[in-house]
Structures are given as C-alpha cells and as structure tokens.
Image (cartoon, rainbow, N blue to C red; front, side, top):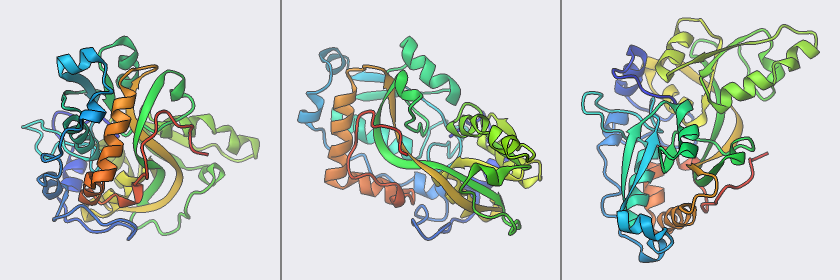
Length: 310
C-alpha cells in the first residue's frame, strides 16, 4: 500500500465513497455500503490481555508500555483515512495492530510514513515496528524480521471496459504494455527485475510507471496512461467492487505472506507472534478479516520470518 496525501485525490475519494459490492465472490465485501461503514465497526476493543503473550516481551518494553510504529496508508482495505481531516487511520493493518496491542497490554503509537522509508527506519531505530502490507521476500529477510498476519500478494487490474486483456500468469504477457505501480514496492521490484524477458524473446519491452500514491496510480489507469495496474490482490479486488473506480480485477500473479516488520533480530517478534496466534484462537482474527472482506487471506498460524512463498 502507498502513503496517503494530506487530502485524498479525487480518484481515491471516489473509491472510498462508492457503494460496495463483492468483487470476485471469493471474499465478501466490507460490511455496510462502503469502507467508511466498515471503518466504523469496532471488533477489537474488547480483546483481553494475555499475560502469557505479554510475558514474552522484553522487560524494558513491558515497563515502558508503549512502542512506536511507522505505518503507510493509501486506500482500503489495508490502511486509509476515512476522514483526512481527523487523520485517524483504519483498515486491516490498523485493526491487527490495535488487537495485538490489546493482547500485549501495550500502547502502540502510530506515525504516518512514506512506504519506502519505513523499512530503513527500523534499522536506524526510529520505529520499533512497521506496517504497510509488507510482503515477506527473500531480499527483505536479509535485514528485516516479520511476524505474519495475512496472506496477500501481487495482482493485476485493468479498466472495466478492457475485455481483451487476458489474465497475467507470466511476465512475457506484458511485453509492449505500460504498467502502473507503486514506488518502492515488491511490484516495482518484480517488474524491473524481469524486463529482459521481453527483449530476450525479441519482443518490445514493457514500460513501468511508478507512482507515489495509489490515487495517482488509479487515475493513470482511468486516463489510459497505463494499460494495467499491478498492486495488492486485496486492494485491487476491493477497488473493483467500487463502481466509481471503473476497474476490473484481472488476475492474481503470486501470493506473499504479509507481516509486521521489525529490525533483524528484534526481541519483540516472539510476543507479536503469540499475540496474533491468540487472535486466531479466540476468533478476533476472523472477525477482522470478515469486516474488511478478506477472508481469503486467512492464515492458520502466525510465523516469524518464514521463507518467501514460491
């Protein structure tokens, strides 16, 4: 997901306020008429503290009672601002953060940050943890530890009236096209690392246009500046369910586990893993996914820094 500007772009605002439906039938849409209605639902305030999970925290963290989180926001369902004037974030990332904080008896102070700055800031100590729909990749695991809480990944979308484009299962299908995506994301990395596939086959290379926020990426698709958009599976499916977006979810490309991000070797990971597993066991986990229409992203258990999915 991408960082949200101070005021939502017109495209992003349309996606938020349009009536909600079920994009693919694989998961229900967020409850109510829109993401705004879903954001108003409280499914975490009654989550009880787990002394067993909290005991796994470092002593200094238990005494301080708080952690600092760097989080990026964009459009539903990951993290977004229902009311930009209030600047209170909502979404899957936010609900899981709040629920884990309840289990561990902590206050987690969220600071809005640009997506591409969060992981480096963990290493510098600016943040204790980060969220931003961060996929677990081999490259990231060299410097970052993850505690997984959902399974999302990479997908493609096109304009709704584009019925000619076939589902993308191989990069070679993109030759000669222009793809819009987010700066600093796994999508940009994947696309840039495989451009040679087209030229090696004697075909025209595809063009990658990276944008700093999801609203700009959507606008580029609506205006025909790009042929496809590559982004999160959940985000694109939600976007398709909003009539004002004018998009069609084309296909999943690959799945990735998504997790809370920590500096490599952080002593916080065992407690966070225990907290997520507690939420799975007590049913809160399912309630969060149902709230945001993402039950297809459920995990059976949380893991610490699992290998990148094949």
